[in-house]
Image 1 (tube, one colour):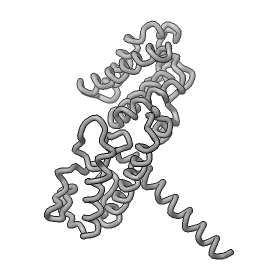
Image 2: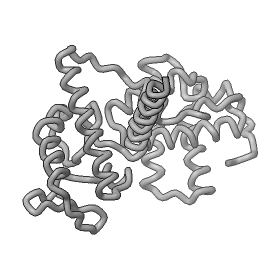
Image 3: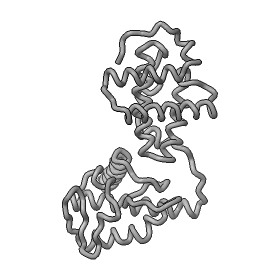
Image 4: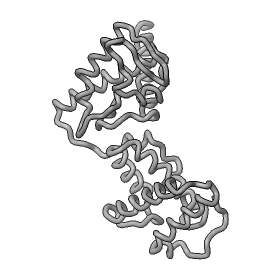
Length: 249
């Protein structure tokens, strides 16, 4: 990061956000040697944040609060997890630079992790009956994920990248990272039930080529998948400990 503060006062930058973004992009080019496509992506992410702040919080990029940033990222995460991950990366680097050059006294993105945004994501109203069906679909999905991890040795990134074309069910084969993994009959039956019953309930606006989907119908990313498995593992061991205590008493 640049250690040389600019002579322009922090208050002046509130009216010069376009110039501020361009200076930040110049720093990225000089220090990190980013290309034209990466520079354009960073500019698009920051301009999108600036437009959202103007509509919803009436603040600028410089004086925005951490609460407003969490609201913005939670909405982006509910809409497109992949894009939200990229924009989080852009914002973390941008606000660390703002603090470094003296435009802010704090870094509102420091310590913000994706799991925190997922728990505060934009809420979607779902009728009780549909919510129950969604819960059953997620349970089936999670059981299928854990079964593939244990039986096939797949990692989180492998499962998140699985697409429908990677499933050759008539040959009882799963393709992953140039490997042909033979599926046992029990695993094949579980997978077929998930594809026929659970997965259609996770689809939303359009079909997806990915096998495992989030509650909003978008593809899972590895960080979310690892958090899901960690939560399931924690519930399992807590249940085992309760059973052991009850057996002792």
